[in-house]
Length: 213
Image (cartoon, rainbow, N blue to C red; front, side, top):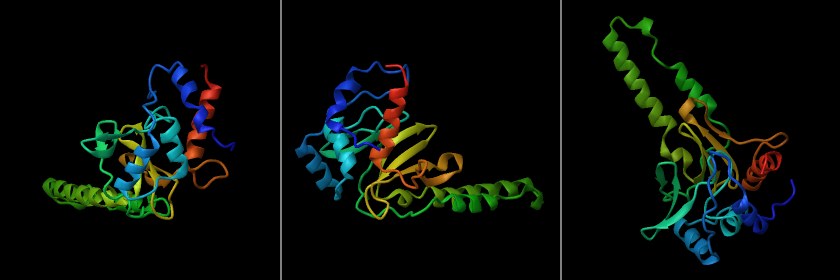
């Protein structure tokens, strides 16, 4: 991958005629002082390539799917604002807990789903299903599973992508497909078991090169 010339990208993206959907216009860039303030608040230094995006492209803007989720300063605090939600960065200094996909955990929980044929009464089955959902959601959607990561992109239908900022997976993109039963999985590319922010963004830029301007 050729290094991305971040400082040269904003103007072409601003001039580009966007497609009819799925395009987030570049927001104002962060100043170095704002970036320092953001990192002081969250207690970690953001990955260097993402810092370049914030300083030269925008605090949010065009990117994969619906674009790069913006970080904004509201009410004296920095917060990432996704599609219909604001992300609380209170736990970014705590290491991201995963080292590999948790699909096996999701599959094992799915295997415990109650079997209707083992219940004598419908009410007993319904109670067991409710209990399964509480246990499943309490484990799979435990917010601690994404500590140390920021939401970087919304894919739609409650699917999301995260940029890890703390711990051994720092700098890597992870896919959050828990909403459709596939769990949390590191993003990958051919010949790359992990994908850094710059690689992730570079792949999206390639799709622009292949598409009509």
